[in-house]
Image (cartoon, rainbow, N blue to C red; front, side, top):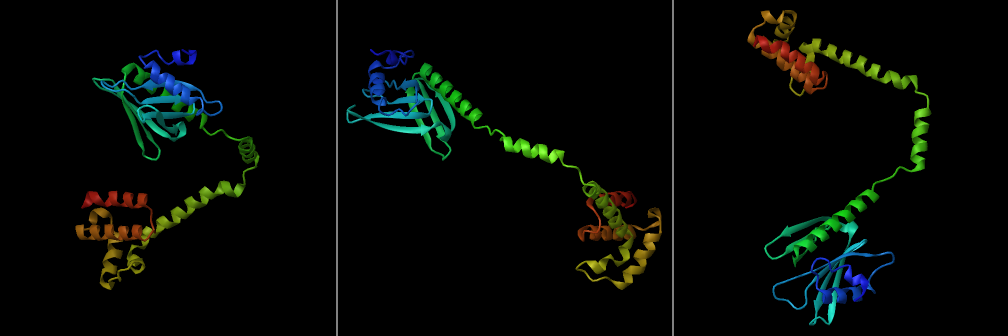
Length: 245
């Protein structure tokens, strides 16, 4: 028996099945492709068991047909494999894997020792693929990054946050315009309510009635809805009013 076949007979593989597979694989393997492990079914009653071959490039499912005179091969590249699974049963184990196109493939009645070796080898290949697929920054990226850092910072760009803060303070002053706010919304202002609002705005919160406080809170909400004050400003104004309601 050839030495390459002996290396796959450590976990109760059927020697005849392994020999038949390795003979056919000689014409199927790609350049630089090496067989890492071969697992063979061990059903209670079977003459032509299915097999699974794991190489450094793919998983090959081998299914004999025509009374063992021919064989079907179906392969799945490692970069198409989404995950691998092993389920141990009373009679052997089931090894299965899923592809990125949602294809489920499994082979059952694999001896437990073989199933563990298959699972371990598959995990190692997927991990190697994951490490090799990690994007490496190109030299051009480093040059671009260094160039950006070396450029002087424009004074106008530094001042932009200050401009935004000034605009925010100006918008905050719109909170004092509560009497004319209804003109900005979809609802038409009520002329008879304007004096009461102006009056309530001039009083301390402790001297306002609950109706006046509620109306004041509604006016703040309209300012917020129309984008004239910020959410944080509205929350602060609301906190000031709520204890008096």
